[in-house]
Amino acid sequence: MTGNEIITWITTPAAAAIFENLYGVEGVERARKRYTALAEGMLRGFSPEDFPETRGNLRVFTAPGRTELGGNHTDHNQGKVLAASIQLDAAALAAPREDNQVLFRSTGYPDVAVDISDLSVNPHEKDTTEALVRGVAAELVRRGVRLRGFTANADSAVVPGSGLSSSATMEVLLGRIFDTLYGTEKRSALELAQIGQKAENIYFGKPSGLMDQVACATGGAVAIDFADVNDPRVQAITFDLTSCGYTLCVVNTHGSHADLTPDYAAIPAEMKAVAAFFGKPILREVTADMVLSHGAELRKIAGDRAVLRALHYFNENQRVEAMGTALKAVAAASEHREKQGELARYLALVNESGDSSWELLQNVYSPQNPREQGVSLALAVTRRFLQGAGACRVHGGGFAGTIQAYIPLDTLDQYRKRMEDIFGSGAVTVLQIRPIGTEELVF
Image (cartoon, rainbow, N blue to C red; front, top):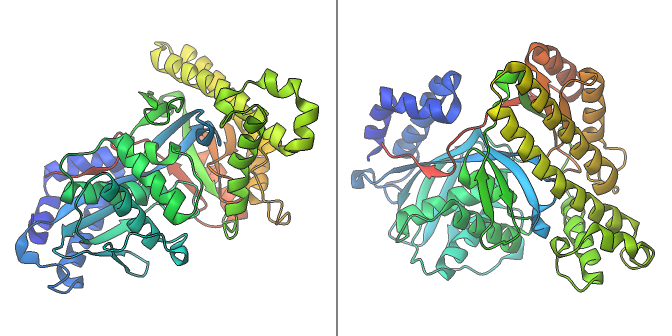
């Protein structure tokens, strides 16, 4: 389609139906303005060499952020997680090019220009969008795709540092754009996720697991078992809090993520050090009993924190199973009282997960900067506010950033005020689970 055709389409009822599915009823008008601005930016913001509008081959893409529901730092040792895609996303309009240049423009950020004829790892690009572009392209080329460049105009509501996985969102978005423009077939959500993880680990320089990318690529709420990392089991989970009187929020404490990569890297490294004691590469191949029976030796070899983190892993894996069972029971319950009872069981497990991350995993603040403990403070304030109702836990990687909270609907306004008085305006974001993962929007 041409840019003008897309602008016309955005005003149609068909577009409204798609936007409602992505962003909810209240997000339709905002989406129309957003996508119109992106199309107008393509038409007026690029030179004819970068975007020859007469070719009429403009494509539209969306990639959601994600929220982790359970399984904090288990995926990198082939554990189990619960996660979901959310209404906050990155949207992009993209057109193919005849050369090897990728020109990626995103609202509020400097333009990214990458020549993908060079796919070598560049240490100076660590932690940048350039690294993700090059890394995703390199992995697709390794899989046999003959790539050229593209020009894209994007806008992301998944803010870096928000704990909603902005890097994974960008990785799977880039993968979908490249594959749609140049791939021989539409790649699965899992393959997009694996491509994105490679880019993040090797080019971006962050030793993440696969959970973020799978959740962003798949859509909806999912239970993921990474026992076979090449073919993880992904199961859809019904997740409806509103009917039970709750809403899901994240609170951004606005802590600095600078220099936290060593903290993140230490978690899988220490877990794998415990596994290595038994001649195993990952904790999935070890049991809690094995660890406890060799506790004295492991304390000397790997350290106390490594043993605690291993215990978190074992407990969290079991907890994810129980959380999934509870959510299924909530969905199956026919009476309101029964739903409330099953949800209470689920929320108790959420609180247990939060306690384990705080006490055993120890990822609520960086030991390098003990004065900054915004996540701990947000958890403490939320617990005091809830007084036993609802639940809260650290969200995502931890050390700085966000917490996740389940708040009764009738207290949401008071909760928002309480948290924003401490952490600033806009700190509280209400999340909606969206059913669509990373896709091209076809009109």
